[in-house]
Image (tube, rainbow, N blue to C red):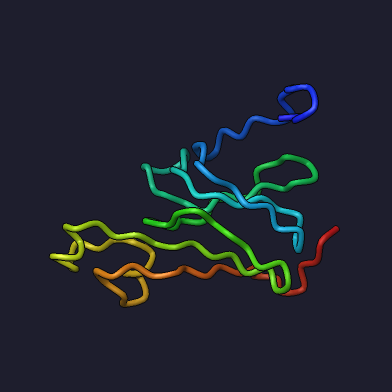
Length: 121
């Protein structure tokens, strides 16, 4: 949305609305976490091109919240939360953390570009 006049610039249908987004000046992208609309509801990291307003991709991130990015190396971070039932029974953990053997505690997920040479336009 244009903050000056309220005009809608782009509507992103591939992912639900996140409660917080992050602009990374290092790669010119917005990042946020929300439900991926193209799959069964899986929380994902949404990636939007800030220059064009185009959706680029969703990366599965079950449990991930409030994405932030470090412009120096373009790494993206999400704190991954667990609830009380997962703490009491870590075998129920299906978050991003559990994919790396961390169960029942939460973690900070770190994402990076597959193309490390990606620079801001």
